[in-house]
Length: 296
Image (cartoon, rainbow, N blue to C red; front, side):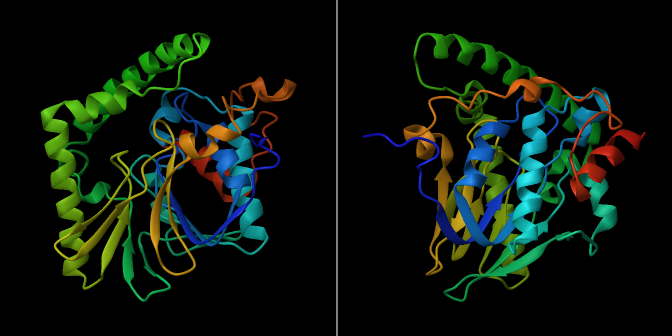
């Protein structure tokens, strides 16, 4: 007998890492992330950058109720005792101005070092500082972001057709990234660069995001972990009680309970058109969204 979303058991982990949620964009799979947050608990929750997409919000306001619900769920976890650390990325880089401050129960840091139950020390960082495109030519990064947004738009309508035919979800942009030779080489170079930074700092591994490619591998004695994203693959990195690390693919994990994201309630379908609307987004992440619109 298959489980329903309400009966899917809650899983407890020592730590959870998520990144590249891109709240404020149409590509964000907020309903799946909300399902993940409802069915998982952890001592520590790391938000490893690009949680809110300031780039897209400055171009046009998009903030449906499902995105509010994700924010509220994270804040609720923090209030109930989960240690929540937010490490801003390049799409929410405005929050880096508030590093080493606490907003409510969420601590903002530029990077962190996590110690696993089995004693390994892991550098936690978004990773954009090691991306030559973002670091040296921001306009090229924005051009890439535009092309990526187009791929996600095509992906959305392609999967709408697949859903009507009762076919499973398929990611066009992920397929293209894996098939294009330069993209594959870029991912490999990025992984090795991050591993070398961990080695330079004398830690045992690194947890990052940024490239929307979930992975866990050993690179010459350094543990490289990428927690993926929530616009394509819906993945997270978790640490079990014994220190074991695992990448969770929530589209597959939740398949027994969610054929598709739960339909929105009547009010949830409404988009919030400005920060002075009826949005109930509380706390620091609401401030993040407001600050994003004020940045020239």
